[in-house]
Image (cartoon, rainbow, N blue to C red; front, top):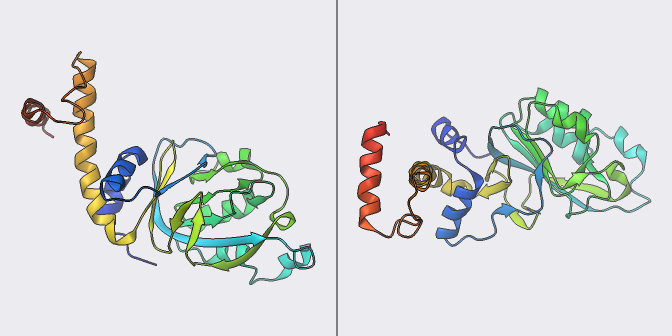
Length: 239
């Protein structure tokens, strides 16, 4: 598991996924937002942590019986018990919500173990109960059938695809009340710094628009006047 500095984590707690997506695009990376997932319930705060992954493949009837849950090494159950505190448990459920990736008991266990959040490109069962937890959770939609009916949990902490985004173990996952993005671990410090500066400018731009300014030359800042006004705004507001 890669190290996420406290300073970088703090910065990423206060920037939007939209801002991060723009920065990743500037760096030539277009597919880092996990598609078709949403918060089970909005939390009003960001989810930030390194990825710990689980990969599902299609279920095979002779292998996926309830007997599987007697096995303490079953990847889904073992993953819940070994996902490091502060990490985000990210599941590749093949964008298939016909069966649940997990339910409220397992996800409650992740919360109690100090994990930062959970993401699936499939569905969760007991989603109303999951929504009441403090820990952020993201999925495509509620799904009641047990994972065994369509998913075979095959391996932990390997590169996966989640909602068409590549996720490598240790990549930094950031989620807000809109969506989730994957930041390659080696870019996390750089992106957090740039996103903080970009968020500050966006705050200034919104204040200008509310004051009646046109977006032309303001956003993006293509006029020198805009940059000068931004400097003055920062000085005035102690930012």
